[in-house]
Picture: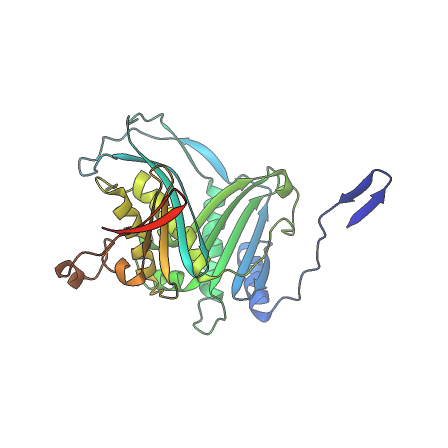
Length: 312
């Protein structure tokens, strides 16, 4: 809505009326209300099911953490990942990153960790149980679920986005839970816009598409590989990055793309990988690829306004 004045126009976000809920939404909301006393609001946008769970109780807290001895099987990190981002555009995955050799290793433990409160953990588990009991029917016309748990008193939100088939597989032990957790897009944010928002008007409801979901998952997996994995990149970090990308497309049998383009912004090295070349990379590459010739890296070099290609 726009209010006119002599000084100009002041804009305010227009809150559109909520579309009439479908039978599936009613079923989910009734389940949460009846069984868990949760007042949740849902939206169905295309094949994406949005869940908004507002609360006035704290979601996170600090807790003491006991020191643990270093894991002798975990390899020390040799690189620091300073930056990574990506997008899917013109049928190509595009990634840029900045990696430097690790100079120092901080092994200290301050003895404090941030964790979910007991209330948050209970709320989180109840929402997933409701998903299990209402949305896992194979005939359900849903591809993705976005779950936003928001502390509307302090303005803190925890959001989880996942592919429903992944959760369906994890529920029947088709994939390990640790693998499922890597497939969930998790983010925590804070904003004064969240305070007092009982109906989720700050959310931008949209349909989620597989290429965009995979791009964000690849970014998260690359971060995990460098910062949390027991086997961080040791020598060729470029190969580790493209290996994560290759494995992710492999897990989802995703083939609807023409190539992967990477840009090392520090070394200015740009590379292109075709889907066929990706089959030579990753921890879970087909075993028969080990006996074949190595994949070819195509470097695109920009110099003096000219573009040249160099095979490796």
